[in-house]
Amino acid sequence: MGYTGVSREELADLYQRQFRMVYQICLVLMKNVPDAEDAVQTVFRKAMERGEPFRDPEHEKAWLIVTARNECKNQLKHWWRTRRADSEALDALAWEQPRDQEVWDQVAELPDPQRLVLYLHYYQGYTTGEIADMLGENPSTVRSRLAQARKKLKLKLEEEGYGQA
Image (cartoon, rainbow, N blue to C red):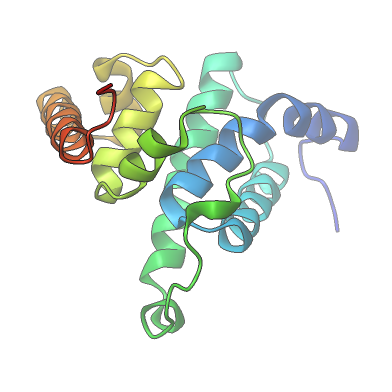
């Protein structure tokens, strides 16, 4: 397979720098480890085939986030996935954040758009404006999704008595 614009060393460096973030996004959206791993592999294959260097580290990160999101959306729309039962709960999470499993279980229950903006804002540190630019959304839409996610998360955690002695 030919490498058009990215050397093996550059691809290995990119993978080392950004694997964790791409994997976390894919896991957030796919909700299971095997599908997340497939999506990550496809994202880095696309990076290899990209053929041009990234302008800067932020451009690299934004491109990977958008590509990961799009790849997951495409996989989730695929006909075979809609016919398959999702037997895996989120018990095989292989990343460090968030540390509190109860909170993460509730985050995982949120709809995909709310879950993604919550992850990008709180775990990757992006502002709502930056998230809007990356996802091609209106900033007010991102803020609304973030507010809805926080509200739903708070209600769910209160129902379960989270944080109460």
